[in-house]
Image 1 (cartoon, rainbow over the protein chains, first blue to last red):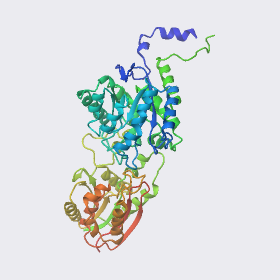
Image 2: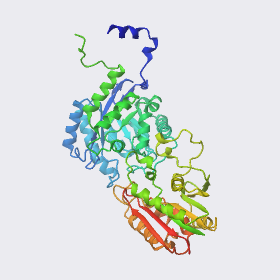
Image 3: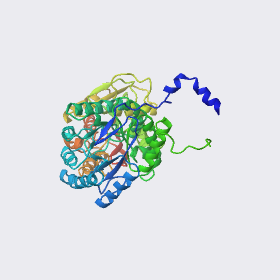
Image 4: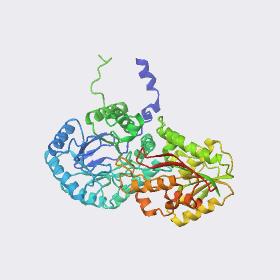
Length: 313
Length: 231
């Protein structure tokens, strides 16, 4: 056993060898009052205030159930809760007033109950974002890629963070239909970096900006796999990368797995994205996601094992 | 003169490699191959493939299907730089290749925003390419036929597609000439300009028609048909 230790000792390059893992960006990420180092992997727990979202199917439509979920995910290790009032899929219209009614009182209640948890709000509308920031939200998760151009103004005015996403130019709540790219990752980079630059120019604090390739949004399964495989190119920009893959259709299509059979694929994708430099992971299953990220952190050498006695006694 | 014409959808999933391990729609591919075979059997001197593209343009006849835009992992390393041929034309070229057709071919893109009158004139021009022209039209109907459809449900989609299907089944393409471009855009019917090229190429009643497939397994209307040219 000592021979292994001695054989490593001579390799000067070993210290720099990351085994192919892409080092995350060097910038700290600030969300609300908190600051996260560049090697910290964060879980963003999904809390839907919708009666019809694809995975939870209205499980947290009732306010009491939603608050119960917030308590549970925080206890399970979520760093961020992402509250949304409109499903991504097409369906019956949710007006601005209705979206605010669904989310604003709830954001205020979560803020009151959890002064330190980071609150993200999943909306593409600036009016809604404004109300929710006033109610205590720290981060605007604009998952439809800057469709409403006034979103960054709201983030700047409220001192909130902003997620700059790539939805392939699709209007909110629409599905991709024969989306075709010369180079999907180049398009993701161009669009998200342009949104980030514009946000900075409009006064958003650069340390509060993330980019998100938005798997499945404006993308077919092949595109989402490519974005996953090349996530390191996004991380290499230095912007913190948000990864949102939980139970999405590209996983279902890849594994021929129904809506309730995608957890394994979700966690596998999460592991790859973390390895390639993703920083924040939007998830339905907080416990399992946290475990995957802790394991990746340990493999990378950023986190010691919880308990190592094997062969050491 | 048109010797005979085939209509096939321009759906990416017709490219077998794009659907992964599952062939997904083998019956649709077989219907397309059968319609194409009938065009080849009608002894054309040239086959024109017409499909929607960003602009009206003729593409090099040796152009081939390149799936890279839909599946980067499947792109070939030797793909030439420069603009990529519209996918519908690649799909049509592949149908010709798979049939073993080796005669002359013209790959004609028709601009998605081309006005109906210009599409009809283009169709008439295609019909004059030779004494016996085989025509392969890559066109499909609305992508908004159900709640699960790519474009969600548009209540106008069913009637829109039904009118197209009825015209083709009757061999009288007159109704295709008048298809409203704005409505077609609303219901995400990408085939509109290509159908109008077909209507321009076949102005009279087709003496024989065979519809090989008409269904919407994914909320997009696919129509596969063969039409005989004027007797």
